Image (cartoon, rainbow, N blue to C red; front, side, top):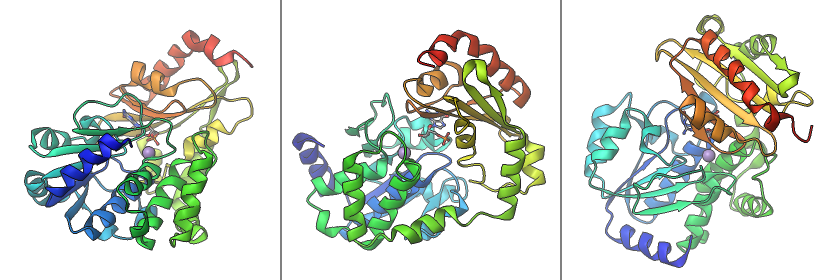
Length: 340
Ligand code: 5GP
Ligand code: MN
């Protein structure tokens, strides 16, 4: 963050008694870790802080320090509305368009509070007084570390803050393997470990807490894997029936799309998941190299994200969404097969 933005943030914080920190709908490790990490920091500086998510977050994150105090809009609409209406300052973390918070978006939109955005997704909207956006960053959690650092708060990073930020960085980098992982990411992580983040415990809490149902669902997903070698593409689909038969719980399908991307030669992967309750098909897209799934998701599936990881949705049935996806591929054949 440049000096001008730091001065603006310090000015906004000076007058902020009540602060709300919001993550995106269907929050992931980066959203929850970033919000809780920043929340601990701002509380310790004497602010009255409330972390809010649009809806529930996955079970495998339900050990993060401070997560019990988090409120979700779908379960605590009244309390959340009161906090948002009373807020002097609202941080939005790990997203850059208010509609990424679902029904909570209208409430945020109507708020008189000043907004500060901290985010690493492409093409940020202009709603914030201070926009700290850096698409090269591995994760929002890495940005929260730099944010705290530039406010002179490095020495105030406690074990709880370090644990939350480490978790955000680790989950968003696929355990430090995605291209956005930089030497600086590793320096940040080293500092977080020195401040008390226990890397091995965190990895076990996140990755070694699978339920048998989740692994059975993974088995179904892998059975459904379809490879289209002519487009260097692979995709997986999961119907609501398949989810129900395996007692699907939030977060169970996280990472499944990476199996499609792990097929030798494949550079573009998708997973299509039916959501009967919302009457949509949710789509996750991943790529290797220059093929931008952000552009693809924006253009065809009302979504967005990063160059190599994006998501979107369709109001079509699962079958028809997959059909549409396949019908689009020929127009990308050159992009997908160049340098093959
Ligand atoms: P995932 O596939 O893991 O849900 O998301 C991958 C990336 O794309 C994340 O950074 C996420 O924030 C973003 N993303 C997922 N779904 C959507 C969507 O519907 N709209 C937009 N703009 N971004 C999305
Ligand atoms: Mn993120």
